[in-house]
Length: 615
Image (tube, rainbow, N blue to C red; front, top):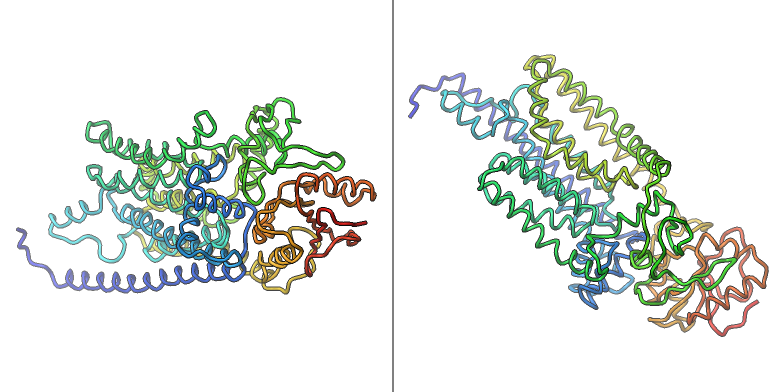
């Protein structure tokens, strides 16, 4: 045992260090509480406004299928299973009325937000452990080395030369808030929050594997995180193997390392197999999801978003498309065999069975240009000052720069999945909400290797740059949300287009009068109705308990309204001839109200009943 005396100045230094650490812990607790409160406020705002997206309508219908008909009925090739399963579980427990279901949905979203926050803290703490180790070894071994030398490790919450602890955690929390409250948005119905949680958990477990390659629990956690990530979104299936490759890099090629890697893979496979096997059996071919295939055909090859009839040469022939029943304007029927409020969007993979993707250099370059513009706007412009600050710090590392580059190279299991995700989405189509977890991985890797020489001017640089990064992410969060909140709190205005249907404080519940008026006119739950206009957003039909089974899509609606009386009568007869009990339409603001149609409350929706007389 080392019995060397402890000097008085060393004792004072240690006490000051503990005091600073205790003070930071209290501040950290306050900041964490604020982050939780902001998530609660965002969820409460969503519950008050009760907003549902077109994708959200499909997820609600899939959740109903899981709840009422079982696993196989709810599984389809376009939507992931984890998010609607969570909704189905909440519906099973609380059984809300339809007009209140969106309140419960926002409560589920709050739970997803808190889970993602926990995943972020886990990952960011692992990065914190890595960055404060000045020797790029495990922090615990660094402490042991200092103890052997008879001196304590550097006092205070962080050693010299690294980003101050307050700045490191401030950057992390503002980055997290920007990702969750601005890019994903707690009130938006999507699985992206779940994907972000899975990615951050996977990153955290990889860093634990790096620090403790002989431990079993990190590889177990990695496999579980990747399995749940795939259940949330099919895009995580190929990315899971990038994460597993990172685990292999840290575990090595020994027998013990191979055994641990096999455990991670098997856990991923066990969690992925129910969705993968069910879907492959349904499609009678191996598939882990058709969303990527379909999106390439749409966004790159130009296949129509809806009602594909095989009209573009080279993209295959539809096996069972929606059935075209009219022309000028085009009308389509889709009463069977797909369920849901709006069947064309409930399972696009069914209607697009047979679509083939083709590589066209010009089309691919156009896709790269679109996704490149999104990356430029959301990453370079919105984060440009923060990225520039980090780059300046990396350049200021001086003699530590080569050390930092080696450290960054050793962190390839963390930043490579981020690069793979960015590259994968750049090929087809991207919204930044898809990449939130990967952005956090990339920032964590950059901050982990940052170590400047311990000089006064470098300390000022670290503090200033840290404050600038926090400011950048805070402004990215606050300014757009403040503008959006201001517009949403305005009084609802007369709607002139579908996009304004959700304007104002009523949100999606502006659909409720439409549903009630349909019931008053004798339209019953389970009936089929036809529609002219933007059928994707048919929440009014869900509230009424009816299904849209035929339509004139939005792109053809102008022909319906600009046509003469004979055109409209012919189209109405065609749509009602599908067995629909009513034809509902959304009258555009530039067109007078149709004579003989019943207006649904004070909305811009009108209806004509089957067998009714209209002019």
